[in-house]
Image (cartoon, rainbow, N blue to C red):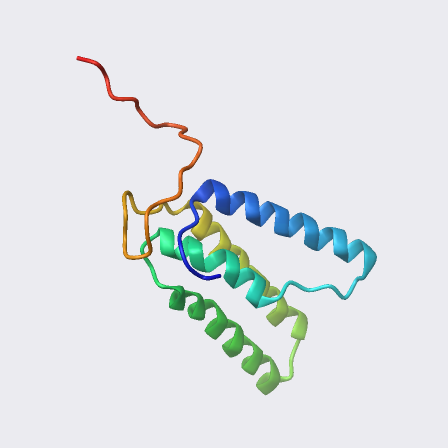
Length: 125
């Protein structure tokens, strides 16, 4: 499940599908949330494509835990902390979507083929 690589085009396609399903379910049940497991299924292969381990995802989880603890300790405005956690996830998702993957094989396998946009064909000299 957490093996292999996910290039940027596949990542954005999966992310857009996840967001569409999420908002579709929110129309049915306002209490719908996206599990961190579902997000990890998407983020970890993307990290692999960048040559990073899935443990980098724990930075985001750690930030969520710290913000949650601050919310409990300070007993102040929980909406602020929830917004900060959401902002952290959005920024992490954007970085993963913009940062290019490693060219060629890495320790997580061969890159998946993309759409071939912007690739030059070898010229016949």
